[in-house]
Length: 285
Image (cartoon, rainbow, N blue to C red):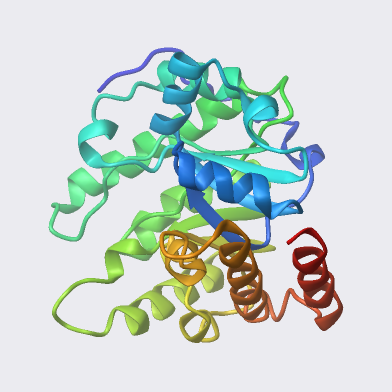
């Protein structure tokens, strides 16, 4: 792929946009069950929605962030999508959707980087990803949308391409994709993910890292304290969304979220906040 007008100047507005999301991040879809759950949850929450879902909301339903999500929900849009969709997605298309939707955060311009690719292809894709990230930052500089850059790479030199961009713009947060570590035959995915995340935080000074694909409290307890947020779809299983009433699903989710938040960033949740969550469910049940 080739793109024109890739920016080279430093983006100056990033640090003014606020802090990184923390805690459990629910990966959601534009479907009725997810919407019913969201509307019943009634409280602070953080969600991540793919750019393909955003386009569906924009084109077919006329929805934007402020009409679709409640005010107290932090919204992250994500360019991390299936490879078949990713190869068709252009930077301008992604920018247009993000700009029109108006999320709080965006994870931009993903490119595939796999261990079975040759090193030259991985490096080329990582460079494209970082150039796209800088381009997106420049395009959205006049908005309140904060960019969360992806870090990828199988060697320090490959990851260093991401680090150079992050340091150049003095960014304090990044996103690491961990879903590909699971589902294989070796059975050591969590050990490998833990080591790779620790490599990233040791190679790059960060205030926080968002991990996509791991939400088990046992797995997160192994991660370094720089992992402050965990995004995934485990909330669907833990809330028993498909097999419980919405009220029951919300209560189960709140209890599970408490246990996961306690393992993130050295502990994100207090007993007081959990009691407030539980009381809210009972009052509105």
